[in-house]
Image (cartoon, rainbow, N blue to C red; front, side, top):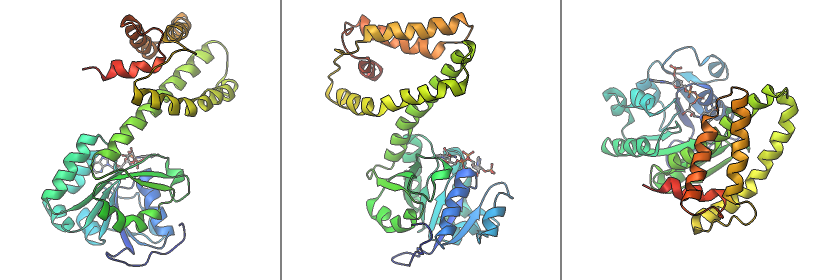
Length: 301
Ligand code: NDP
């Protein structure tokens, strides 16, 4: 959709406001500009809009003025404390009444639901969303956006959201659902990053450079997608066959990571926690099951 122009339909879809000009807010505003939308921008700290203004963005002097400029307001700040600091002020609320907020800031499902309730009480039309890909993907086919909230409102604004590129998925009317997916997916991302940072430290201690390890690290990454699909079915169905790799074998492999780390004086707390969970599963009599039975353990209250 990059470069295309949006025509007005129900609401004014030729204008959009972006509140928050961190790296992601700037990328979103840039994509709206590329699509020819009248793009008004505002940021708490002035001076982040230079490049956008050079490309045609309009700078608002206040959040109130920015909100008043468009029917659709996209918010992208660090978290919902920041969202509250920007939106939950009387003069901003007054300006927001009847307009649509698409909040692409990240936070927890409960914060999203609380914001949804607040919006309903104040006559603000509200969609929550999450961006699952880096700034460089915005405006390209690689971007991934998740949305939740009233489906009619989503459909109404979908043409404008489409200019951000990539795929947009509406996950349902529960306003917290996009944040719930976001948190679950970030769990994968940050745990993997923690593992990679730790692996690089072990490799370095053994005289292996990051660049030497990287091709093999990518090979490990490539193993994961089919396993994700297989284990998702196991978790949904409660079947955890460990025929090919029982959890007793997995803990042995985890112990090698712990022992090698600690021999080099490298903290191994994350892997100790992982190994501890696996040992608890074995202690509960599930040693012949696969590792992913840990999901059941974590779900226990
Ligand atoms: P940050 O997460 O660092 O957020 C920076 C923005 O938040 C700035 O506009 C900053 O304003 C604003 N902000 C922080 N605190 C406040 C406050 N109290 N009141 C008002 N504004 C505040 O940068 P990004 O732009 O990268 O991220 C924005 C959102 O996008 C985050 O929720 C992030 O998780 C999400 N995201 C980012 C990705 C990325 O690759 N960057 C990828 C996917 C999602 P100021 O300039 O005044 O400090």
